[in-house]
Length: 137
Image (cartoon, rainbow, N blue to C red):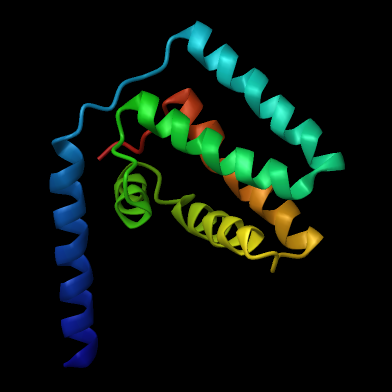
């Protein structure tokens, strides 16, 4: 019974996230805005070489900015992750991992490899957000 109950709870949670997502007005970015964000991402990647911790913080900020511009609410991380899980389920775990590393950066508890992984994870979500590739439901 526990497995059935857990599955039902997970399905109910997904339905709630989908209902919430349907209320959002997610929009594509115009070419100029996409180009601006791509340039900013290039700066983040270049900065990683000399300042990996700062690059991770900037990657987190940039992903949040793109989400805001697209129309996702960004006030609460858990809500952001839930909203993203509806449109981009294949990268939400990357987003969670990257965000966790960004939090550890602020506590000076992330290794260089952690930082590299965070940038890779942020990049996967950034690419999908920038290109407007929401999963078709």
